[in-house]
Length: 145
Image (cartoon, rainbow, N blue to C red; front, side, top):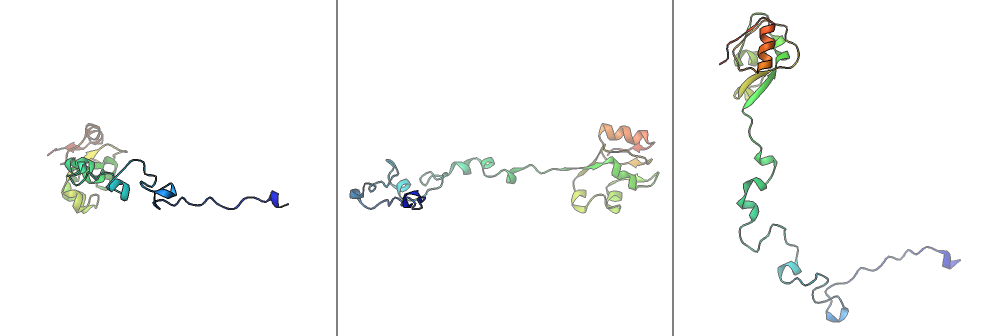
C-alpha cells in the first residue's frame, strides 16, 4: 500500500557558490565567465562603461518616440453635409460647426472622399481628386488655397 503512494518530495535546489569542495563552487555553474558577468546581472546594452550603441543611433531608442508628426488633417467629404447649400467651407467655418478642433486647425486641413456629398458648397481648402469630383458633381466649386 505504501509503495502505491505518489512521490511528493521535490528535488532540492542546487546550492551554488559554497566552495570548491561542494562541486558547484568556483564559477557556480556560470561556465567560464569571469569578472562582472559572473558576479551579477548586467544589462544587455552594457558595454563596459563606453557609450552605449543605443545612444549612438537615436532611432533604436523607441518606436513610439520617433513617429513623424502629421502636418495634414484629413476631413471626410460626408461631414460637409452639416453645411447649408451655398455656404463657404474654410478652416473658420469648420471650427464653428465643430467639425475640427482648435488643435487640428493649426495643421493643413484637407478634404478626402468618403461617403456621399449632397450639398452645393464653395470649398476654400485643399482637396483630393476624388473629393473634387464629388464636390463638382454636387454642383459646388473649389477655390483651393
